[in-house]
Image 1 (tube, rainbow, N blue to C red):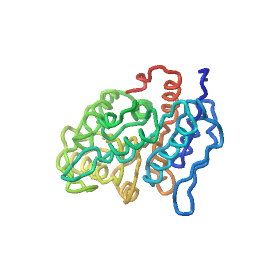
Image 2: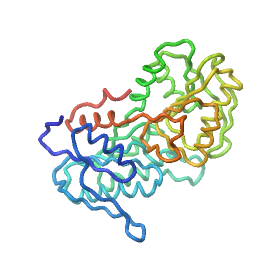
Image 3: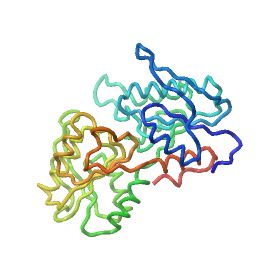
Image 4: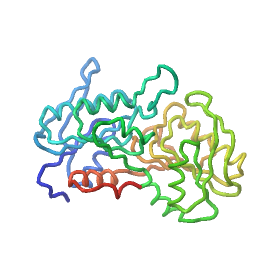
Amino acid sequence: MISHGKNIKIFSGNSHKELAQQVASLLGLSLGDCVVSTFSDGEIAVSLNETVRGSDVFVIQSTCSPVNNNLMELLIMIDALKRASAGRITAVIPYFGYARQDRKAKARDPISAKLVADLIAAAGADRVLTMDLHAPQIQGFFNIPVDNLSGSAVLVPYFCETLGVGRDDYVVVSPDLGSVGRTRKFAEKLDLPLAIIDKRRQKANVSEVMNIIGDVSGKHALLVDDMIDTAGTLTNAAGALVEKGGAVSVMACATHGVLSGPAIDRLSKSALEEVVLLDTVPITGEKKIDKIHPLSVASVFSEAIARIYEEVSISPLFW
């Protein structure tokens, strides 16, 4: 598939080896020979078992739970590759952790997203490839190129195929005011009307639904968000759409299924009939419930990697 003169190599940490393997296979490659383990005291150990000198290297690693371990794996792998004279290193981060700490919400808050950006650049990464940053302006925290892919590239074709386009019995719903821009674009691509949940957050990971802006009565509602963490916002919104708005049914989709804490229990007991998630975060173990339908992002990331390697535009992948 790739005829570029310089070697391309795909490496993976431990956060999501299945996705990395899928990406490598689509590129006609094998994963690089690398062992990422821990010493007895918990420190990360990285061993590169093949040469990377002059190679165009892509390290696939989501910084999902355990966030700090996966982040340190990524940083140490980048450092090892840099010291082994890799030609160019691209950090492929399907899910970028710490992205929600992107500003000072109150006095003396850290801006952890900026710190993580600085760490990745300081480790030796030459560019970053990610998907649906929680706040798009995080791209500006980096002093290296950042390509922020959109989960809509996978989600929209799926819903076009399963639901169709321009149906009058469906409505796309934003779960909060902060997601309106993303949800509006999603609704435009499906040619569906838009509704908005107006909520007031009392404290972290706790939200209260206040009002529904738009008509959802007698319609099937599709909630669209960038991530589902504890699922409080999503399940409260789904309940409000049915109880207050009179929606016939509610389903949801999101790019990142973080699903921490009580998320699975909440989703199981909620009014949601189906939750479509991309596999930027591994959906394994107790996260595999009947309501969750995973979709692979491997094709989008493999195409982006091929375009970066070939030095051609990846803008056609931005939805």
